[in-house]
Image 1 (spheres, rainbow, N blue to C red):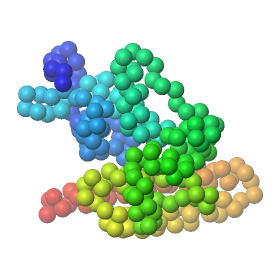
Image 2 (cartoon, rainbow, N blue to C red; image 1 turned 60 degrees about the horizontal axis):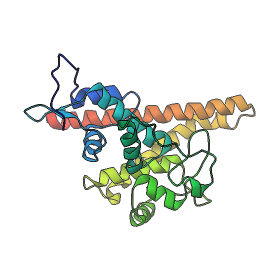
Image 3 (cartoon, rainbow, N blue to C red; image 1 turned 90 degrees about the vertical axis):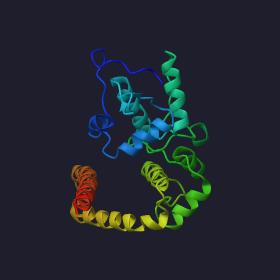
Length: 238
C-alpha cells in the first residue's frame, strides 16, 4: 500500500465522500460494495495512521470504471481486473466483445440497451461470477428467470450479482422472497400507469410509454431505498 500523501499535495476523500460522488451515476452503490471491490484488489485506497481509508481522485475514477464495466458490459471482476492492470501498465484495455458477435465469441457480454444481445446459461454464470448450483437455487425461488427461449437479459445479470452479494451477509434466497414480492407489486403499479399508452396505435406514444416505465421504475427504486434508510434511522433512534 502506498504511503499516505499529505492533503496539501493531494485531495483525499473518505469512503462516505466517495459514496456521495458515485451515487448519482450508480444509485445502488453502497459502502459495503466499495469495501468489497477493495477486498477484490480493484482499488487500493491509502490509509491514515489510525486506519481510515482515504481515496484519491484516481481511486474514484477507477471505481467508476469498474461499475460501468459491470453495468454496461456485464464483465466479471476477473476480466475488469485485467483491464485495470493493462491501464496501470500504460496500455489500452482489452477490446470489448462486439455486440453482434455470436454467443460463443462473447462469453461475458450480456444484453445492452441497444444491441438486444442475450445471455445463455453458462454466460450468466460467468458474468455474475456464481455457480450453476446457485443459479438453479435462485431460479427455484423465482429470483432469477430465463426468457421463453432459455436466455437471460441484462437485468438478470444484475439480479444474480445482487443476490450473490446479499448472500455474503448471510441472506439466503428464502429471505429474499419478500423483496421479490414487493418488486412484483411495484411492477403492477407501473403497468397500471403505462398500459393504456402501450395499447395506443401511435408508435411515438408507445415509445413514450416505454420511457415512462423506465422512469417510474427508477423512481420506485429510489423511493424504496429512501424508505429503507428512513426505517433504519428510526430503529437506531428507538
